[in-house]
Length: 318
Image (cartoon, rainbow, N blue to C red; front, side, top):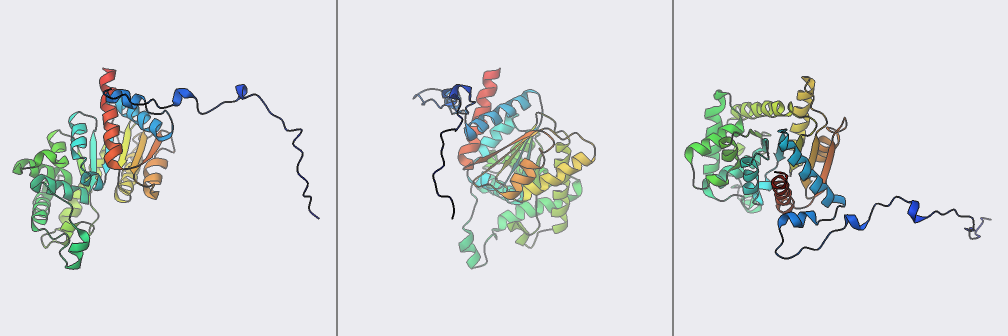
């Protein structure tokens, strides 16, 4: 029969809490916000715990990277544009907080539509029913003709579109990341998977030109990654597959050619934790040194908070 007698705890060993290392003390607590106080006071009063602490530490790393003129590269999906963050990112480009931008194909489409028409993002379910999803004529004409005509120039997909927007000066150009990046001499690349974008459905799509210019952008991004070093930062905003895969290959190229692209920090921002961002951007690239951050939440809240914190900290450091 099994022994069911209660265990005697009389000889249990204990020790004083004064001898123990504790993770939580009032020094890490949040402070309540005072109406009318500054944003810098607000972020300084966030708890020094978990993701709030990570957000502030990441802001510090970006500040230090730019003070030392080290790269801060942003890889981003289209959702970031759709939730209205182009002005925040354009401000970061203009103020030198970002040294390079990489978009997926959908990101370039939303950016172009915003620049020319001040509107983007259609009702996919409705358009799918009658076969008209993605068939807006002007979008296909602008993007596909630009890429077809510019492919022989040796320029990348992102630069070609940015230059086209600057040349046409459409009514909403001020909201375009492509145009703003080109204007401020910030490399902007577009990484296209053939068949994933609505402009590939149009009769004037040139697969060879799309492939050539996007491949040029892959090599441009790889060149930027050659500059990564301890103190650099790579930020991934809302791309679950395309940009994590492109980043992993471009980083491999940089290291294969002997560049010391190790020891930098990476961060992924998204609404859930995805496999490829976690493994390809956070864990594998920093396995030989550096650190990573995963911040889960809505882009329209977290990304403005991050760049506002960076600007405040930079201003305070001057």
